[in-house]
Amino acid sequence: MAMAVFTFVLLLGNVLKDILLLLVHRQATLGVVIEAVGLLIPFVWVFALPMATLTAVLLVFGRFSADQELTAARSGGLSLLSLITPILLLGLLLSGLSAVVNMDLAPRCRVAYDNLRYKLKLELSNVQLPEGQFIKDFPGYIFYVGKNRRGVLQDVKVIRFEKGTNQVTTLRAPHGTIEVNTESREIVIRLTDARGVRMDNGRYILLSGSFTETLRAEPKEHKRPQIGDMTFRQLQLELKDLEEQLGRALPLTAASAEPSREVRRDLARQRKDLTSPIRVQLHRQVAASFACFGFALVGIPLGVRLHRRETNVGFAVALILVVFYYGFILLAQGLTGRPEWAPHLIMWLPNFLFQAVGAVLLWRANRGM
Image 1 (tube, rainbow, N blue to C red):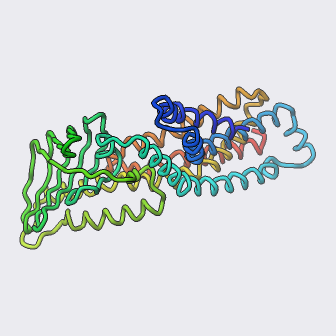
Image 2 (spheres, one colour; image 1 turned 120 degrees about the horizontal axis):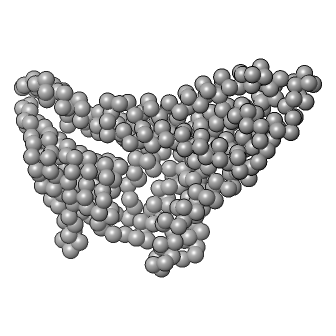
Image 3 (cartoon, rainbow, N blue to C red; image 1 turned 180 degrees about the vertical axis):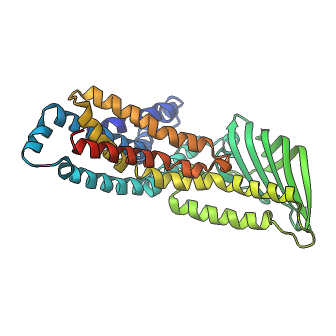
């Protein structure tokens, strides 16, 4: 029941935000809407399954304790650990199911959903520089845009390969703008306060200032999936491919000249900056899969201690714990552009905290403390 409730609530938010707009603008039929909802369900299960596990455990053991059934079980010689063993095994099983959803099913369905919307709503200005992914659609360029707010860009990274030469230019800018000419299909990107390095036949040249790049775009039938919508295997391949390209574009040694310490430091920082979003997403998919087990482990002793049978109390406590857990996830994602803070490792903190606290509370509850 908790799973159905959370799926409905999370699904309703996505439906109101995206699908109803398509209906209002008559860009989708009822069949397309049903298909879109079906594709969204596995995506919301990423969050609904752990939340439902926690809520169910809190409700069951809260009532179990409030109705004195735990006392009766202990009087009959049954310990709390023997009673909860099936629940912990179920938590591990649900974590395995969550891993399948997080690492494969949900990303595939999300990409199919985005492609469905993309076919209905193909606009040149919305397609060219999507945020949060590596863009390789333009020959000789690799782009990464942290945020794209109607043409105002933030955290822009550019690698430019000069055709027919050994010249490679890497740029990083905190701000920029994008202008789209729908008639000529040209995109003009302007970077401000940019810094970078140009490698020309073994020589390194530091760059700084404002830069302008003019690109010609060609529309495609399908959007390239964002990093957050890639499967675990796709992320691994993307990371491997990017590291190989960066190895050619940002070598720490050159044929005819050894780069200075400042250049080496800047190159190493750019490598980390470019690969950090993929590493964070890889760890997020795996770490979030253990949420079901962590929630079950901490929910059992909390339910016993709450000693309440009211459903609303269980839901309230579950929501508080969920906000705390996913707060770390959001924090790590917010630090994607700061690889020196190791955001991929921060993804694991809520699991360690919940499992450690749950184990301690469970030990105390088993001893009647």
